[in-house]
Length: 295
Image 1 (cartoon, rainbow, N blue to C red):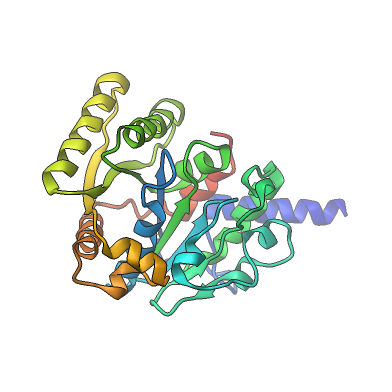
Image 2 (cartoon, rainbow, N blue to C red):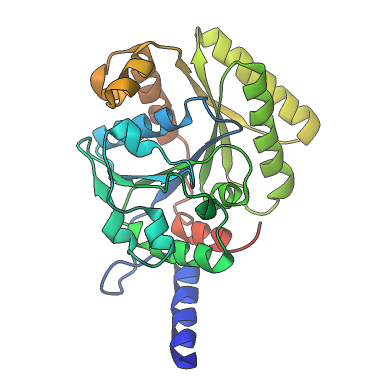
């Protein structure tokens, strides 16, 4: 048993140091960009943005995997109108492999279901976290991995944030949303001192482009003044009746109404991301190094 444990430990360490591998033991040359989408509070439209960004990337020809990382309150499957037979809880409990739960969608991307209503999964042990990171490596053939994290600053949320290449904080013009977004940014800026992710801001549910810019500038100024930290403005998404109607229909708004204002905003945001320099030497290597240590 000790020999088996030693072999497993060596295997995991090899993965952490060298990155993700394809079947057959060959290093995957594909450079995966890992994006975490988060917010300071619930109800700001974070999940809707994550789902529709995945569709936009898929429509651009990218191989995309969307992970419902809202561990304990997962609802990506609701927006997609699917009922997964297994989820991340099964992976954490070693009942399933990650490859077993990856679900194909009709929108051109793959989906990894989270676990809804399981409070324990929101506070994983170190062993469970490491097993999750090991299974995560099987997704390394993707061009883009989008992680829809939980809202707030729970430990597992922070682990996903610090492990990602890019973190997009979603807020709205509401004062409480702005305050909570600042709290998340403050944690990243002051606690995650080593290898901070690229931090950007998305303002959702705006009535005009000027409102989005005004909210973003307010947050950017406060962060610079009190935290001495730079956060960039990625873009905005309009308040649009298309969004709630698409939720009721369980069809993403980029599909139900691709010419809607909210849909066009998502396409513009993805276009801006693609123009942003990306350190191709990071990806899974960064994820493993950061996810498996206590930030």
